[in-house]
Length: 325
Picture 1 (tube, rainbow, N blue to C red):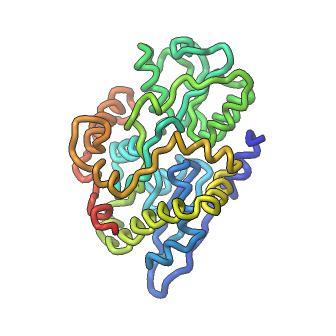
Picture 2 (picture 1 turned 45 degrees about the vertical axis):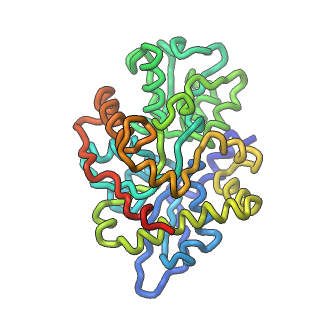
Picture 3 (picture 1 turned 180 degrees about the vertical axis):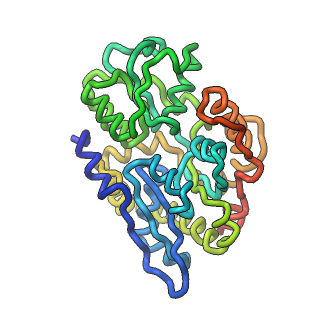
């Protein structure tokens, strides 16, 4: 079963490095990524030599713990990281200077709050132990679901655990519900009688996933970054042109079967180049990233996940998707 084996398969230590062939005189761009279907395609970029083809040396760094990748970016150990808009805004509120340069996808079902047998409605979570990785996107989804049901964080017993550990604790019946993202949803749903209570499908636009870079790096290395963004869109073309071999790479990196990985497709809406450009335009719905960022910022402050109002004026840098071929 995927279960506990998933954690080992996805690993190789806290931080495993894989490096594309370096170019003479060029310092590799350090990019972090972790277990999310919208980010795992970076492995295809690497395996198929698409960074090299785009003319940019890249060191891809895999993180078993998603929060560790965020911390590495904030500490300057990465130039860019694959992370959600929510968590990026939280980092900015904490003093980080970051830019969103690319939208990988929207979560449309692959973030879930999964409950034990007998818990079939969100109000039934009252007084129960619920695990999630504190301050990250599935904690945010949990709070959104509680609010929609008329509950607050104080109505549950929150158990802060790294996402993989949270899924394992739920399967071991140490908690009553868990907030996790794919592929950890597969693991959590192995618990007999478990059911999905809250899904990102119910909150369209609330969870978007991006390539986020330190502002200093963006300003000093725009040409390298442009080539990274170009390589991403070349990757999407590669996956579309050669779905079979690409699926093998994706499933292996996720540590799940190819059949299981296919199930994640409906829960992750990968953004095309045109959708990237459209999402960056001002608007009055969650389909507009500037609007979504303002809404998320307000919510994060309301629930205490952001202590100070973040400065969002320079958050989105559209020049790279605008210039992508």
